[in-house]
Image (tube, rainbow, N blue to C red):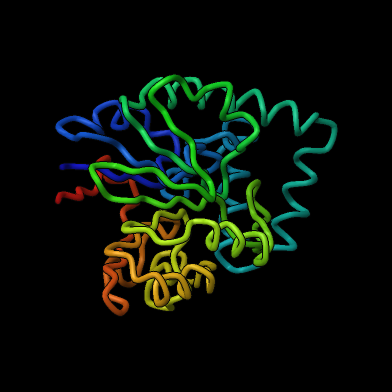
Length: 253
């Protein structure tokens, strides 16, 4: 059995269209939307609306950890614009292209920058969306937990720790634990380019110790200090960053 796994697609529909080639199934761990590309400030919803110069400044503020200033700067740019309508229109255009690129079968969950209410409109037959649910793939039980935890970035699908933990607990025993964010292990949460710790989940780490899945697969941290490490008997693997690599991670058994 061969499964290809991607995360942090961020608009890379070209490579997504071939990500399942040679695999029995594709697993996608979220962040389909490209709102702002930190490597190329000309790409994404924000620069499309406000230009590269404003994007440069926003990225600088965020990189320096000046999140309140970044929110104030962004709010000034949005003043007079129907933010919800403009964002939804741009997201819909991206989702139409990205979901059309999914092969059959695809098993997907949300990232922290995704907009879950829109997914049912674009997930065609052959794409199974799971969040706090499981699926059997090739005789193994895969559990999926979507979204992220609260951060100063205030991305669209951030939830509180209790709600997130409830979704993790609902999975029960799984062979492969799949989430967008990593477990709360410092080496797996630190981004070496952004030079900050992203939020990991204590509930995921507790599940790794208690359930002892064969694998815990995730993304979210684009340039991790450590991409792969063993926690107990579980192999924890950051499968991203697909937007930059265009190459899926391969799981075979």
